[in-house]
Image 1 (cartoon, rainbow, N blue to C red):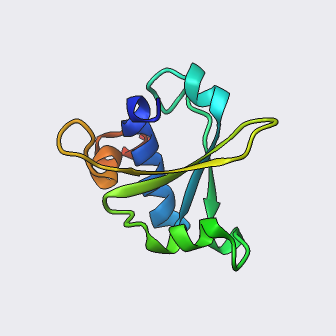
Image 2 (image 1 turned 45 degrees about the vertical axis):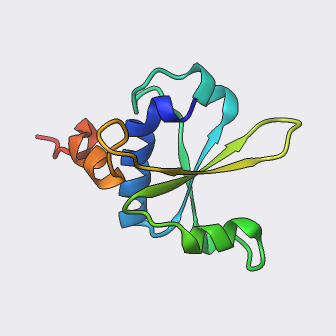
Length: 111
């Protein structure tokens, strides 16, 4: 389900990593399931590495992933454990986060 929304997730993750630094995209599972493949309909937040307590498993992964080709996605769901996904770009079907950002309408200056 996350792969369907790769362009929007990757563009958002890239922009946030440049603006804030390493971290993970945070979404409610039901928002991802119900969303159209568009950044306007995806409800996303970003958790910066600096907000994650030392010793937390997520912190170690945030230090290891490569934001040039990967993103971390935390899915939260009421009554269930959070799920952390490490997603990687794969050729033309899932271009790099930087490439997704450069193609995103959100990357263009407002006139």
